[in-house]
Amino acid sequence: MPKSKVRKKTAYTPPADRKTPVKVAAAGPSPLPYKIVMFGLMLLGLAWLVVNYLAGDKIGFMLELGNWNFAIGFALMISGLLMTMKWR
Image (cartoon, rainbow, N blue to C red; front, side, top):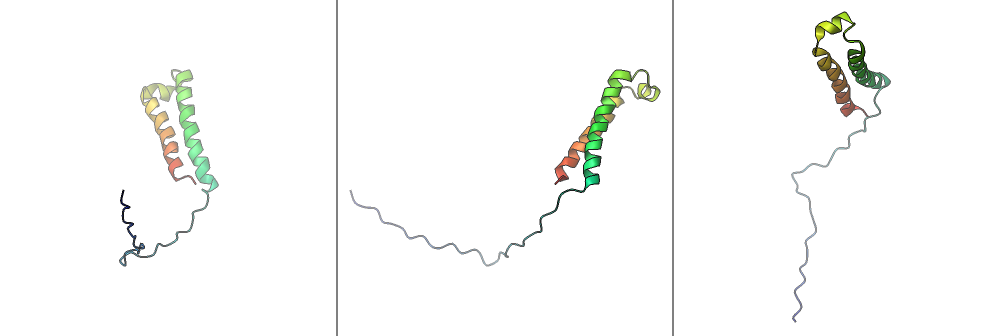
């Protein structure tokens, strides 16, 4: 069986129109108030739902809100969870 020809590969040269990459300084950890607000919103939303289930019929303004209590509780928790995307 005849031997196949070995092809010589050319060395890679980057295109001339591209700029050299710029190093970006790494961002430090999130400040403490950010973490407090983030976890606070998640816990406040959870507490809102628990209070709604346990004593929602005995608290006047929660009784008037009705099913909107679920929206409020979940909105608080989701806003805290969305904050985790920027947490470093």
